[in-house]
Image 1 (cartoon, rainbow, N blue to C red):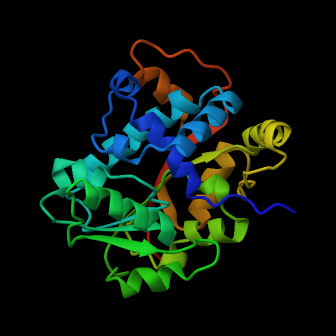
Image 2 (image 1 turned 30 degrees about the horizontal axis):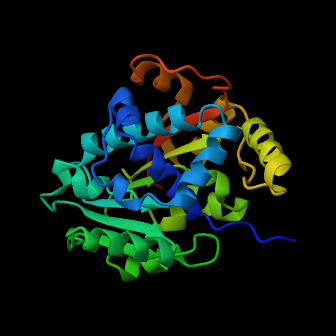
Length: 277
């Protein structure tokens, strides 16, 4: 059986979108560093994703803007940020609000991706600030909580946890552990923000990829399929103020002029706060 491609290769495809200044401008976003990370492999991956998924560009860029706005709105609220599956995301180096060093940022990804990211930034004269901590970690296999605490993460402090474009690549046990406040040792008041796909969307895309590449990339979402049921499940985990938004609605609001797409169902954004034990 062919080994499934590592999660980090998706970063190569996404960065191609973020390097497209016209598309980024159309959705009201920007990324000054994205073009530094574009590769031919990334272009091929983005082309395959666009061929397979009609909303690949429209929704990924709308999601990028939403996560960026969320970060800017809470930069002075939290002193700790954890980015799960950080890839080549450089928002924390570009957003003015983070340049004060008020917050400590922990960027989690596999060692190879973090190493490439550091090398590319250094090549362009951008050094990682002391407050930004790369955390080499395979989320399916390694001890994330231990790695975070070793790097200075303090479980007693409220934190902002974000996972953008990640959850549909992880094993069910990993995902359940990440979403459980006890998995990372979250303090009351911590916020978890992520996007997820319905299992119907996952199955649809997996079949298309299988037809083209003979493999299925995405993992089933191990929570209730209905949004209201998911809210109940998150409440049972100790979360409150649970907001789940169809990404389709935000994409239609952000894109100017309106982008044409189909199959907008099944992709959601979620934000929730841990109420504490």
